[in-house]
Length: 264
Image (cartoon, rainbow, N blue to C red; front, side, top):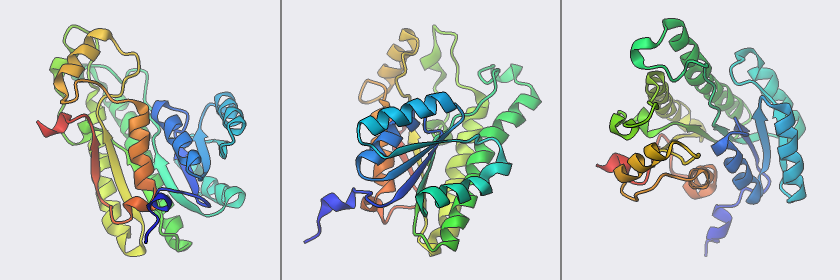
């Protein structure tokens, strides 16, 4: 009889979370460590990262911080080598970073071409190039690993701008282009590396509650079937499933975690 509990365990595996100090990334890091993974958190804030690592160790969680800037493509090769030297072969890689410019939220008609290019380069291109480099590393080491990219419902469907009514908020135009690219490149990479036993999937959250404008939250809640926004923990749990052997026959998927948003 199969022990299904073990399907969800990550004991002895090394998992890396790029952007692991963000709202979702932090919960993903905790989730991975709680089920036994040796978890490496990559992010740019060294103090915040070391504080997180220290607190995790108190909770007996194997979480280790390493300073890393996902927008600096030149550091990828050396970072992968160093992680493997310190923590062993990488079996799970999750891209959750959210790099963006200060004028990221400008309305479509006000976006400067340079800003658009910079955001696409920092966010979409970093995810795609890291996916490739990590997959190549797994292939060379004969690791049948799992790569998970954080996308969005807005990488699959268009925004409903009515949810922003009565606020100064909007959905950044480049966000849709970036997340759409990440979603489809995840499918491409899944097809390309499938013969190596490497799985690549995209997780597409709906809105995640983070103390946003109450008017927006009310508007958003009305639009979803479950009448509420997601929590970071709900996104982390889905990513944990895709990282584990419980999802061993899932690859090339764009999994909606959206309270039913994309079903209507």
